[in-house]
Length: 246
Length: 266
Ligand code: HEM
Ligand code: FES
Image 1 (tube, rainbow over the protein chains, first blue to last red):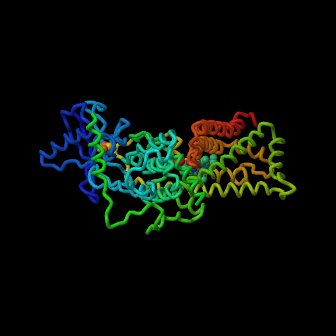
Image 2 (image 1 turned 180 degrees about the vertical axis):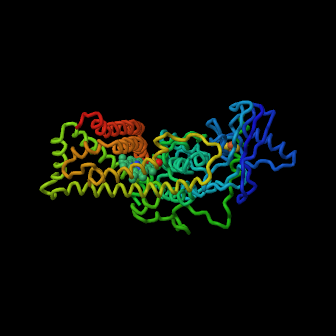
Image 3 (image 1 turned 90 degrees about the vertical axis):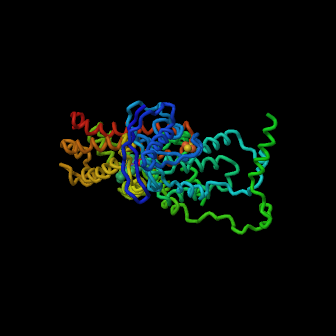
């Protein structure tokens, strides 16, 4: 396959950036999107040009490191991560626009790499349970009803890639935060800190400069893990409940 | 492969941090902790709500629902126009005597006005503040543009502004009578017929009522989500209900100018 790539190039956080056009040929439909970028980068390096910087780690869709907006969609046309997106979803001769996540809370570090530590700080504000660590507890010590375990697991699937923020017209982190809140909220272990968790995480989310939710639904459409929109309603309920008891 | 298992256990224990000899291990809860668990910050419900995006959205949802309830009653009341001047004007008079003798003449209407004004102001202020936040949270757009969200969702801000402007016009038209060609207090039927006799009033009302429909279509379902409706059955009901409400409201309101325009009401 031959492709025309238009990629956001920005040498540093404070440097101006622009879309730069590259032609790549000989792309196999079996390549992942990141392998396609690797191919481009090898050629750029051989020509003595700076390779395109992008985040990646596991390349199997579980770490959440990779992330770029491909043709205006977070992680591209398929509901998966950019590392798990394959070139067969593009056609020979296509022009593909590649941009970094855009949000005030995600400053661009370089090219397609953005700083997503705001999400870590949201988790740090309550997205955990306070428990003595050490050896793993006996699995049957706390009985977890099956539906609760399933609900917790569905939300625990969030890999924190930030696609929801990137897709949201308001740069909102509501879907991310709701996944964390609902994950722990569903479990008996999460119950003691239920109120302080949601109040703290939402406060931090607002402090990081993420926007609010206007229920556009772009986040849930983009989420590679399928965290659904009702998660946000569930967090709203959890928040209002906690605020009333404060 | 039985030999896998011991390897796995050995790995699991090897990667675990051994307890440090200098920090004594304490059983949870037996010794006082150096950092006491963070007490939830106090601030009160209203302060918490006003200070957060979710809280402000909840204020919007509740104030929106208050206005919506009023709109339903208002629309139903408007249909009196199809039963002639006596019905309509009698109804308008009844609204002023409602609540007597506990309330003084006209007080019921003033209570409603104060509640609605509070709702409009709260709704508008929250919309303004949240919208500014939202716009600031996405300072750089994508070069590759594509259609996002539904029309109703995308027009909430401009639709809301149109509704606010309409509200001013509407009050000047049929409450104070300032811009109404007739504008006679106590004769709403005649004022309505006179007003919808002009082309500009018809245009303004038709545009505004379509805007109400769009706003309610996203707004009612939005309010349900903001206030935490999660049960699938109820959520489906709210989603369907928002479309039904929007259509019924728009059709009901539009029927009055259309009735005058077609000569059904004269
Ligand atoms: C002062 C004029 C108005 C402005 C500026 C305004 C603006 C807005 C905005 C920006 C939203 C947020 C929508 C979103 O993106 O989710 C909203 C929601 C809403 N509006 Fe209005 N609006 C106005 C008047 C009204 C009226 C007259 C009604 C009564 C029917 C109404 C009912 C609602 C409801 C129920 C919501 C949903 C709140 C939520 O999503 O939780 N609004 N409005
Ligand atoms: S590189 Fe780990 S999810 Fe894509």
